[in-house]
Amino acid sequence: MNYVIIDDEPIAHRILESYCNELPLLHKVGNAYNALEASEIIIKQKVDLIFLDIQMPKITGFEFLKSLAQPPKVIVTTAYKEFALEGYELNVVDYLLKPFSLSRFLKAVYKVNENNKMNSTVSETVSEVKNGSIFLKGDKVHHQIQIRDILFVEAYSNYVKVYSKEKMIVIHEKISTLETILSKHNVLRVHKSFLVTIEHITSIQGNRIHIQDYKIPIGQTYKNSINQLINNTKS
Image 1: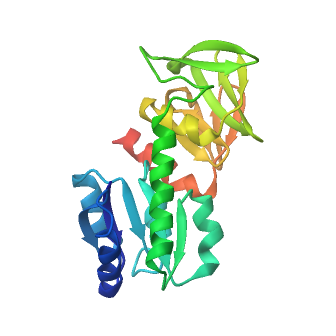
Image 2: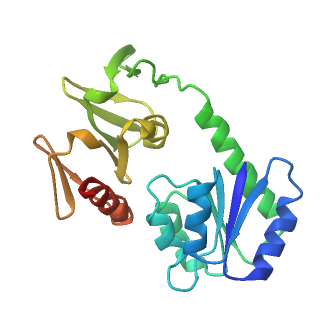
C-alpha cells in the first residue's frame, strides 16, 4: 500500500516512518506538513492510505479530508480524543491517540488491509460491474440492473435500497460495498446513508438533491464534494 503522512510535527513523521518500516506491505510516497502539500502529493501519486493529523495550521485534517471527492483509506493520528466521533462519521478506518504503541499501530494497518481484502472480493449479493450492468440479489432473485439506470442508493438498517428507473430492490449489503463498486461509475456519496448517480440529479437546493420526485439529503461532511461537483460542472 502506498502511504502518505500528513502532520505538521516532524517528530510524528519520524515515529510513523519507523513503524511503517516494520511492514513490507507499506511504501511511502510522500510526507506532507500541511493540507496544500498533501494535495500535491495525492494529485501526482497513487495513494492507498493516509496517516492524518487533525490539528494543523490553516486547514485541519478533517477539513482536508472533506475536500477529497474520493479519499484513500485514512488512519487518524492525533492527541485529541474529542474528535473521534467526527472521524468515524467520515469513515476513517481507525483513530490512534498519540502517543500510540507499535502494536496499536500494527492493529490499525491490519484493519486497513482486511478492509481492502473484503472490498476486492465479489459480494454474494452484488456482482462486479460488467458491460455497464450489475447483478443485485434481492428476495433470492438476481436482478440485472444497468448502472446508468440507478437513480440512488439508500442505507436501510443492515440492508440497502437500490432505486432504479424501473424498480426498487432491497439487498442485504452495506452501503459502503455499493460505494466501492459504483464510485467509478459516476455515483457519488452525498450522505452517510445515500449514494446518487450524478447524471440523474435534476437540481440541488439548499441541503437537498432532487432526483425525479425524490429529495435526497446532503450530509454535512459531504458538502465539499457537492460544491466541487457544482464547480467542476460550471468550468
